[in-house]
Length: 338
Image 1 (cartoon, rainbow, N blue to C red):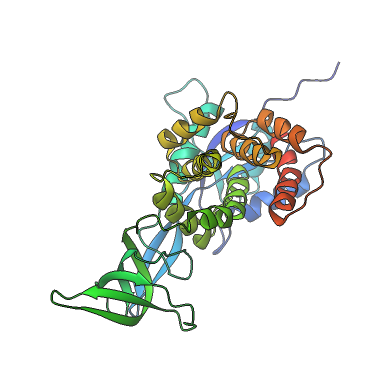
Image 2 (image 1 turned 45 degrees about the horizontal axis):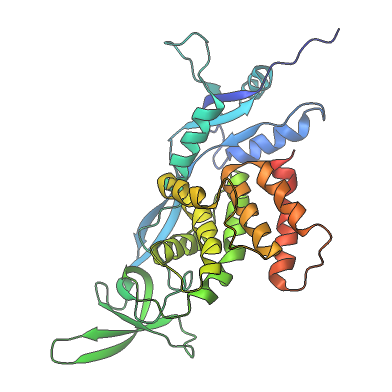
C-alpha cells in the first residue's frame, strides 16, 4: 500500500540571499524544475510595494519587500526541508509558541493576508500622466516636473508628443493655460460625467482581465497597470450610468478592481449585486460570460467560470471584445480548474 503523501501548506520562511542579486522567485523556479512530475510545485508569495525615491529632481519607484526578509512558500514539509538544505538563503522560522516546530499559516489565513498585501502593493500615491487616462476638467496637482505644486484643470492636448500637459489655472481675476512638463501628478478631483464613461469602460476591460489573471497567479502588477486600475476605480465607483443595461458590467469591473486593490468591503458590495444569480437585465450571452469571468477571477471560484463557458458554448466571436473574452476563458481555465 503506497505511503500517503504529506499535504502541502503555507510555511513562513526567512530569505536572506547568500549571493548579491539572488531572487527568491528564480530560486523557486529552479527548484520546481528539478522535482518529479508527480510532485506539486512550490508556490511563492513574497509581497512587495512601490517605494518612491527622488533623484536629481525626478521621482523613481523601486520595489521593496513588504515583509522584510520573511517570505511565504506553499509546499510539503519534505519539499521545504529540501529547499532549505540548498543553502541559497531560505531558512525555517521556528514557532516557539505553537504545537508545530515550524511556523505555518492556514490557507484561509493566507488568503486574507494576500488581500492585505495586495492593497499595499497596488496603492500608489501619484501617477505618471503617460500611464493613466486623464479626463478633461480633472483637477490635477503637479508633483514633479516644471512647476511642482501647480494645480489646475486638465485640458486635452492630442497634438502633444513631448510628455507635457496643459493645465488651466485660476489666478483670481483671470485664468491662464500652462503647457508644462509633468513627470508625476496627483488627481485631486475628477471632472463631472462627460459621456466618455462608456468608452472608458470598454477600454478598461482588457486591462482588468490581465490584472485579475496576474492576481490569481500571485504575480505583481506592472506600475502602469496598477495606476490604471486605481484611477478607474476612483473615477467610476460613485458613477450611475444612464444606460441601466450597462450598470451590471460596470459593477463587475468595479468588483474586480476593488478586489485587486484589496478593498474587500467595496468588492463584497458589488459581488452581492451580481450574485447568487445575474441581474435579469443582462440578456447578451457575451456580457453574461464577461461578468461571470470577472466573478470567477475575483473569488477564485471555478463555478462561475464553468457557467460562463456554457453561455458562449457554440458561439463564434464577432468582435475584438468577444474574441478577448474567449481567449481569457482559455487562459483562466487551467488557473481555476488545475
